[in-house]
Image (cartoon, rainbow, N blue to C red; front, top):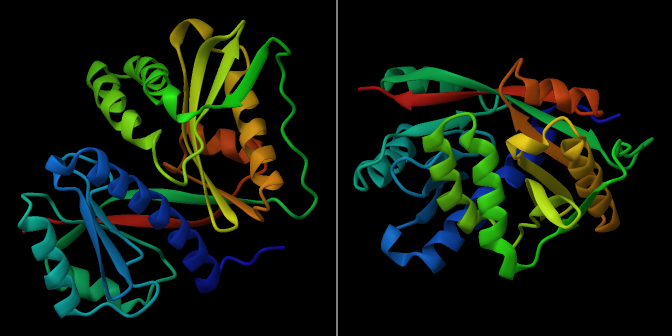
Length: 271
């Protein structure tokens, strides 16, 4: 049984930070005019992926070494020089001195995230696809734009602007070095898209979405099973996923054997 302690949190936070740094580096390579970049300060990785990108924040702050006021000042300058807001996601396993330090510098908590995991080495049983008509496969790089279009169609049903954002974001995400994006298809027609990446011996499952006309047919289940099987075949010992507490995404993950390791807090510099 895995124990949710500081060492375990470091492993999960390292994985997510690696996946996000991979995307930032990919954007910098494909769109150098974007100014995408990241730096390491005191064990924290500060990432700029555009002013409105959810990746524009820090990861790992306070979990590998105790944060200082000087380090936070350097990180804040990195963001403000680029016209970006300052956000930090903090593991509850970080040194507790970070809480008073953030309060002193004018930060407020604005969001929480359930960091979830599944052990792929112990008593593993893959989710069983429920629809034999659905096939899944990992895409090749020439299909990156097609994958992004399917993902955008799925997300657009929640909000049109989200679909537009995901189209542009997905074209970068599908081309990362560690990324292994998946499609689900019926009769070779793509109906769902899912993000996925492998970093060392941990895989990270990113958002999966299905186009409106193909929902409730088992695409999400099939994509989950395919990604976990690929992770195991590539020697991964652990799978992770992040979700809003109490959300349908969290409930679906729990139904498929994922456990909550801890709840992370996102802080915003409000002054």
